[in-house]
Image (cartoon, rainbow, N blue to C red):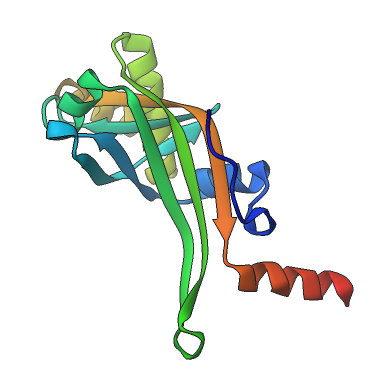
Length: 168
């Protein structure tokens, strides 16, 4: 169903893909938009238990697209070091594919908002976090992207550097 990576030597192990999703703070959600044009939008997110969570407004292009077609992908770039003299970048990236759904159950919405809050403001007090969630949650829509496939890739130069280190 999902394509295998052509350049397998550059493929990141699944655990590294998950680590990248856990550590990074933004990515690009791609959906099938108006008149079947791709629509890609940068978003903050949180990863938990094979699911990506996003918050958004209660209306807009992204939600309209997801209501029509639940399949989506999400790309995170963990590294993009430009090496001008080599005309390349030393990159690491992850792409997750899955089906998105708009959360409707209060308990699931609360859990997703708490996960996002903890990721972006871990030092906040539980009381302030809950107060902020209560104040803001009425205006929020929460989306869950259940991951069906995940792949990561790194620049061949990074692979070669790892191989040289192992050979030393």
